[in-house]
Length: 127
Image 1 (spheres, one colour):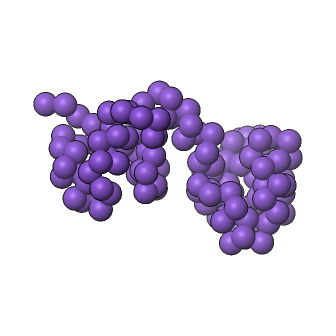
Image 2 (image 1 turned 45 degrees about the vertical axis):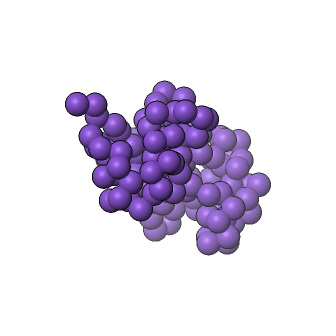
């Protein structure tokens, strides 16, 4: 029996043996589930769910970022830069500079990697 793997909107790996049942459970139309699982077209994600194929994982890592607020230790997943910027009163262009490494800190926000490096240097545990 074939096992299909997907990345949930929360970032967890979900395994299933039935694409039809997965579609029913998640509410995603079956045609999208099949396209993500079997990569019939260049569709790597739908409704927040991602494929675990190598190219899809690369795209996922480029698009989904984990940011940490250094003032509150709040950890948030950013899947939509414009919406994240609007929700947190940030500038989308400067947010891009933060996620691409051109800025290390922007209004108290850092990338998860930067935050973990800071905590490691300070002798504390990572997120």
